[in-house]
Length: 583
Image 1 (cartoon, rainbow, N blue to C red):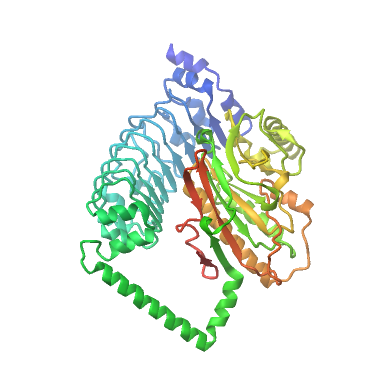
Image 2 (cartoon, rainbow, N blue to C red; image 1 turned 30 degrees about the vertical axis):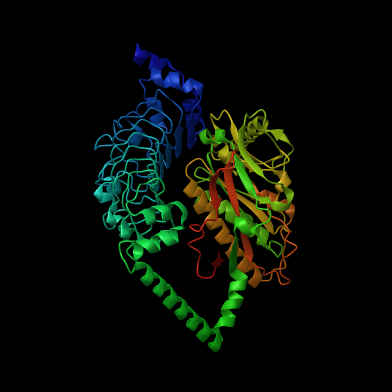
């Protein structure tokens, strides 16, 4: 009976995806659970006959206990697999891999307890997930990690293990060269009792969150991680009480320096640290004096003035911009990072066109065609804070999209779908261009994410479009930047870092190359699509070479508790040599 029911159960989404040769598919909503239950708690086999799929999401299905056989063989081009908030567990049978093109894997919010060989992520030899960059296993019941995780996914950059039952990391995870690209490791809210000194072998580690565990010591070797910028050990009962106080209130740099000089157990550690600081300070003063005497100082000062990124902290800003986040975004598009940038010069020649084009390229590459993250830029003068990031039903969400008349989101999406169909007919091909390429990212969503200003106007509808209200112009110099993601907060930060550093480089190019041509606002509309807007800065330098100022933006919940601030000390750490970040 169950098999017969599975066969007869309709799957119109799969028929549509096959007919339109879609590369993305989202299965969610109230009807999904019953259909998956009828299929035996697995995904329908027909799903695995769509070899063109690059993105697959199945979320919020309490009857989905296993993906089912045939996934790896049937979906060889899959780049992103999102199976969050289902009932997967206690293992994965059969194992997921090999998925040779997979870059993003989200298994958060399931019931996984273990991932042993044959019931895990994939084989280790050869690697089952050779291109995987982001792995999210948070919110499960994992008691241990697979010992061969590093061999299965050797190019892993982000690993989220928050909210499991782990009491230790496998030794192989920190072996020399095992995960050379891992930059983010989050394992808060577990039962970890020990952190191996071998963690120093993670040469690319930038962010480490081990808060709310059972650690009693932090190895001094952690200070040897060359790129580590942000650590969180709050909620651990450390033997070193001074260190315990430091992790609750001090900056990462101070914590790492304390570990580096031997901590409290080393009686002369503090003295050595202070002596080293004085010696370094004296050396730097002598070097500056020598440069001034040789004439190099003046040249460096001139260069820094053109390429300076000055970070303005919230405490120094008389009117900082704040983004308030409503809790319902957690189930739709939970991550957002914002920043204010002042001093862009988009007036000369094709400066505006280069700016818009660079965002388009970021969307195609780093943002994974908006599946990993979406950028929006806004005219700071055209909006009023504080901002609210929330969700609205499609029939209630109103926006004036770029280059269009005011419409409800439901009407806009339907209009874009019709335009996409017309594109396919006219061009006689399955691919579409412009905003039409991103409509699949809203499939199955009962509510849509949106960013509103203090006037109640929707200024952003990610991942689709911005509002005409905050449209970018040639005269723009002050911008509010926004990056949202359904995948990871770190991806938002990485995209924002790249965008701001690119803006600094473009300002340098604009200042050094005098152009006569000019891009009209109408042409800008054609390029921008989803990429919105900056504005005029009356305080720009006379020669247009004023430094960029990056103002911190706080993201808080509705009670005012801080969720994230950007840029923090860990952000903008990879600035190129010709960009100076002054904090």
